[in-house]
Image (cartoon, rainbow, N blue to C red; front, side, top):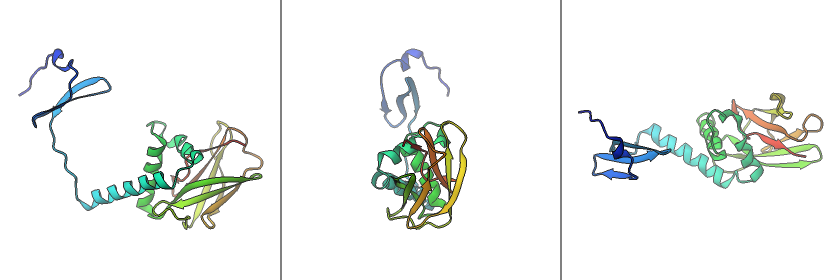
Length: 192
């Protein structure tokens, strides 16, 4: 049976459940009433795997990806401009996707400079150990607000990539590492 509600009813500042029939709440200033639904936690293999992948990604962010320069790089992750997210959400979204294709995949942990060479150290997403991932990592650069261009492809050695930033990268330029079509570093601002 459909019922028209008077606007006065939803103008009160109330929230909570009415028995186990309705829930009153608000979202972004708009009050609403919805049918009460008892939450259940699925124990299907797919649901358990999804929760495990999320837990691993969240643990990696909290314990291994903790330097300000690296966390800020995820704030500049342009793949999520249409859906604004926190650096944490940007990282976790990529880490969960990576676990599906490579459970021991790697993400940038630290970055250090020596002259014009940057050393990027990567960490295993699952255990926090230096990365052992094989294959070609793509190093992309962007000068100021220009387009991203592929600088080079490198194989990781001892969990590290060395990037020569001598000529093209100046202040307000960016660097990112891609492998398996997934961003492994966010977008690192180069400020030298």
